[in-house]
Amino acid sequence: MPTVQNQPSGSGSSIKLPRIGGFSLLELIHDGSGGSIFRARQDRLGRVVALKLLPEWPPASDVSLERFNRSAYILAQVNHPSLLTLYDTGTKDGFHYISMEYVVGQTLQKHLAQIGAGDERFAVQVAADILGGLTALHAKEICHRNIKPKNIFIETNGTARIIGLGLCSCKAAFFSPHLDARPIGTPHFMAPEMIRGCYTDTRSDLYSLGVTLYVLTTGRTPFDKGTPLTVMSKHLTEAPLPLGEARPNLSPAFVQFVETLMAREPEQRYQSTKAAQEAAEALARKHNLQRPAAQQAAAASQP
View (cartoon, rainbow, N blue to C red):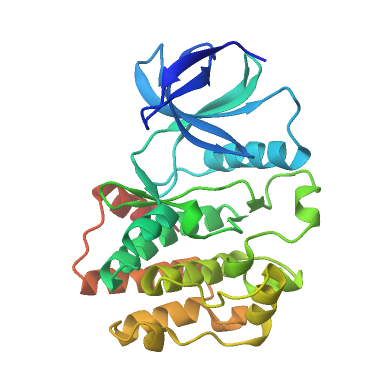
């Protein structure tokens, strides 16, 4: 293993941070089975980056390494304001590493845990941002397959970013089959066709986003009781409490938007991500939401 040194973390405690050539690690941001993410300084360029590390030894599981490599590959394929920018990836000093754009904020999951259910205006902004990123991914025949609050990052300025790309599928690339040999996704957010194991396409991501918006505005998942298998069964056989009843102060247009995203059959959802994005942007205009200039330019350049 590489040598380590004691450094202060963001919480004020002392932790051991790895040493990796060319970077000065400043703070541990996230530690999970798929790798650890640090706020770091790229020494040669003097810029702050998010540095994701996965030790080469002991060897990571096949699934962890596959997710790690997929996320780097996907970031390299798409440039959009709702996705992080990839700087570099490789192996160095005993680690697989991914260097990428560093942004300040927290996941939507943490936001909801701290603040609770959001209002319609916030939900519309999140929807418009995420659908912009999904449109860019889907244009490259990439499906995220795991949209949920944990995989949406809210910057301090309110912009929503898509993260958690390790389960993505991509028709233009060969990925190792072992990760896809089992059900993909998170039970509370999986589209019915994913649960059946039939297929996954871009409309599956729309369903998961619809569930995420349901959670964002009500503070609960549509099916929130039972084991994972029970929850998956409910996605196939039961109707959730209508959004308009769960949160009566929502506008009919927003309720219709979310319920269309969440339709059980793919044929009843928006038939393209672009169509869903246009619906979200129409709602954003009603709320007088202004998109950053970079996102407007990105949207104008999309097919």
